Length: 362
Ligand SMILES: Cc1ncc(COP(=O)(O)O)c(C=O)c1O
Image (tube, rainbow, N blue to C red; front, side, top):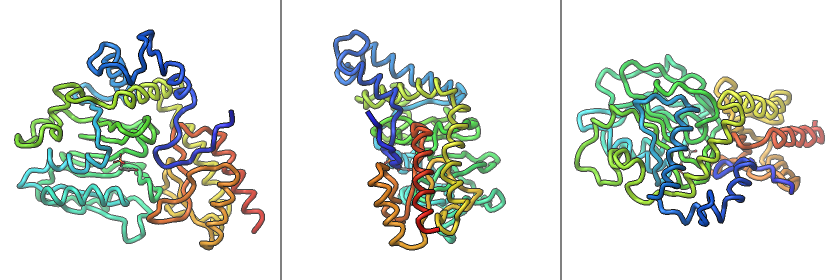
């Protein structure tokens, strides 16, 4: 069977090997005579899946022992609210760096909870870049945390060097580049990500949280919105998305077979280069949205010289079997999302298509 060239922004491509393994185990998981979906979340089998996922995450991302690993629901979007509810005290200000629509949304929720400050923004250049270290000027008054979006799914920019902070908790929304490269977890107090790009299917949200942050949580929060609830019950306070966590655990096993994060990162560079090379060779034809030094390896955004040509490109790409190349509805244009599970061949095919299409005009 020919698999589609899937460049969806999320939910997005999953590794074929993972889908095949899930298919094989679908109606009889580990000789239980039941599907994973039919297992109790309190069963030994499911607890084994959960533990395995946590251990593999710890190993792959080299997560230190003083960090909790949680699997929550409500998407990355619920984290926009939970973070200020849990960590923004009345006498403090939460700092946000704005690099796109998702950081704007995170800020909007924090504003409802308390005082906020925009520490840096690139909105004046239509979010084409990431602020430089010297543009991140921290105010003198106490900041409860600084929030960044590590990869901007819509605009196609990515932090390649995280802000260096002294004594301020850094919190990152890594929804669209988690597990795409090695990172130093200890530089962050919290990392969160919706699973539906690099981790698995939608419905699971990964939270990696430094234990000492738990001491800052106020007591009157609704139970489900208090991180301590999920820490105490090891993400089993209520019924978790069991099948999603199982799929995520299979994705982690797959990442290990790809040479871990080093192997994945190298392949991601190779894949993105195929597409960026087409843009760099003819930048007046394939016009990149992101400035070069802020380019994302995950979401590659561009337009063609006119709206008609952009639409022609998208419609012919669709006919040629490419899926998901339309830019986000808020900005239009084209976007190729080359997440971990998108195979090299799909990027080679897209680069070839871009070259053939361009040659008709230039
Ligand atoms: C960077 C980023 N943050 C947050 C979200 C929202 O995630 P969710 O739909 O899981 O709430 C997305 C979704 O695409 C995203 O790309």
